[in-house]
Length: 305
Length: 244
Image (tube, rainbow over all chains, first blue to last red; front, top):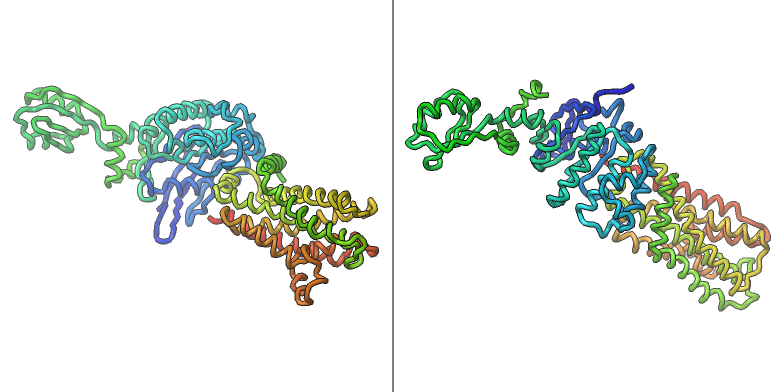
């Protein structure tokens, strides 16, 4: 039987001592989705992932991966995991380690193919100890894809990579998602979530505070910003326009955050001497900052999801 | 048992020759000092003294080799490798069995080298049956030490595992009568010796050379030690992997 739900977390909580690491998370990931789990350090991303993988048992709630528990799914070889750090044997050669990992799985792809896809075919005979941080991450990536899993889980995969390695890494990753794999990755790089995920799940203080496409999350928060030079601007009048949320001035330059930029723009052109006008949509960073600053929009989750 | 894992471990151990060389050289040197200096016709506990020392030293070598798998386990735990393993279909029991087999394989070279040295340089004369029996029984005698390696691997940190393994090897060998025959020690030492698994493995192996044949009582004690230590090792293993 094929299921369309890859991962289902229901009311999951986890407390470490006095710290409520995860405070009630509901999350459903459908097969084929590429989901970014975004949030600052301490938001509960790693604990959520650990519970999803069966490494940590939740205090409350249930976790289902495909048709069973995380442990079942792993035993079936349905899940490939790339951990953030550690988890490799440093004094082994790349090829040796990959042969070992292939031997631990039931239906692995050939080692040479995994190395190729991860872009490290030339490192086969190198000792892992001597590799750079980015190269080690690629070894971990190869380990995640070699079981030919249905679901790939990556915990902050590009930590410690330079810009070029990150771009190469995501190109490799893209080839995997193009094969229809379901992917969940945790990150605190907003641009990665924006560029590579179909769906962004934003966590803060152990809860999901926003869930939708990057575009939806951006739109849900701040609409657009108009920046214009307005000599002798009547700030009170601008602030009272319908849909204008906030007005800032920097000398003669006025910044207007508005829900409906078209109406505001029309007003500016017809009623003021505004010139040098720019209209920008908020980027994901603005949205995340706004949400993280407290405007909890989890009520909008349903309509976004 | 996982075949690929065993191959991986063997390759890694062969590259890391220090442990292997030490486990062969130490007993050879001790054998040369204590064994080759003994008068040819001397007797110890009913067998020729030189054969007695040869078996003791072979046991000492195979025991320290078998315990060295603890270092492999401690290193794997430290680097988060166990976490990776939990994210694969590998069954925990398969991991433990693989490591025990690794221990038993590591125990073979010291046995063979010391016996060959005894046969040639030491002029120890045994029948083919006796050679085969003493080799097999000595190899079995490495089992409790494979289990000790498991326990140490799950208790020690990578930087403390070498000294802990080294010290326990020496203490168990010395108090268990592998270095100096227990009969030549004060009687209180004999009681202490009987509390170590090494005494019983030595007893079992040497009994293969006597008229009465393999001491089944001693062999049962060896297997008893294996069961108890194996159980402790498995419990440590469970505690280590199930920290959720």
